[in-house]
Image 1 (cartoon, rainbow over the protein chains, first blue to last red):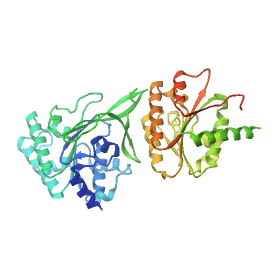
Image 2: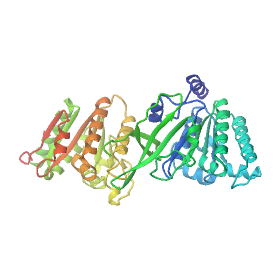
Image 3: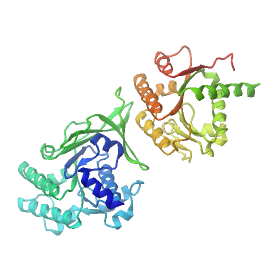
Image 4: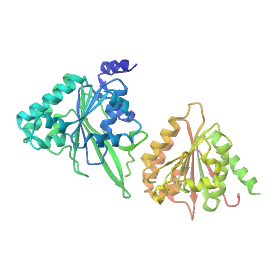
Length: 251
Length: 193
């Protein structure tokens, strides 16, 4: 049954996120092999959305990997255990793989603060090798901002994301890269480069209503998909994870 | 005497909701208790139906004190929009607590999620108690938009909706506009009670 679902996804050319409203907005799912920037300020739900994307994929028979640079694995898993969608068995069974990129960097002997061109190339190779070896169809890097911070020039950032995206696309692996931005800003990345190399942009923001912060979601760009661009309200609950609803426009 | 009047109200609500998809009930504030008693007794006596009750007037704990069966009845789920903002955080099995009544989109999602779990062949009902109180916490335009959405959503999913509006000194123009979106209006007069 799981294999069937995985084959169906490949035939349709779409990678279903498993979040009903989001898939509807995407016209069925993310085109397979796309690299999508998941942009938002702190607390906007980027990590939860990405993890739900991986877990839902695993439940449909697609293996995934989550590379974290921003928080240690024990913290990440502890936070995710509070969600009903999270299933520890998928981690133990190798369907969802969690990897701390800082540990990999250390093992490779890379400078943890600044990468040289060679360092970046070595890291790229290891990411590709892991994706290939695990045969993953979904990959997340949380966050690309933290990784870009270690790349010293705009050219290195451009080169890194371009090469990563191309090789993962060749493996038919759909990738989400989280991008951190300051609150209440309308920009897609810290360095202004990431969005041009990505195939898609999902923008997570918030708006204030009577002092309460309402989470919002907007699909800004998705190459190869006839997608919606409406702004939605986004809810995160332990029971249902991320859900989208039409945003009341009188806000 | 009181029982006879509450039975009368129950019958009026039952008849109205049987033939109309949406019913608006306009009532003076001092008749509120009788009306919700009639409503809850109606719900309690029809366990084969599925009800969602959006509480913006009285907190869940208060409602269960008045109607003890509420916490045990399987055919009703309450979405309490006001307890959390009042600092009450006692969990309850039959109730979902919304952080704030200004989270209208979240309210819409919770309503949809509850009804998703109900079989297609079960009669479904939604009570908004009340539009007037939602307007205390939100801009009237926002509540208007929310209500339009709810009316359309419930129509599409064959869910009956009962919306209450408390009539204080004259009706707010926004409430007046909203309540007339319903297929049927019940006006409860002081004299009726």
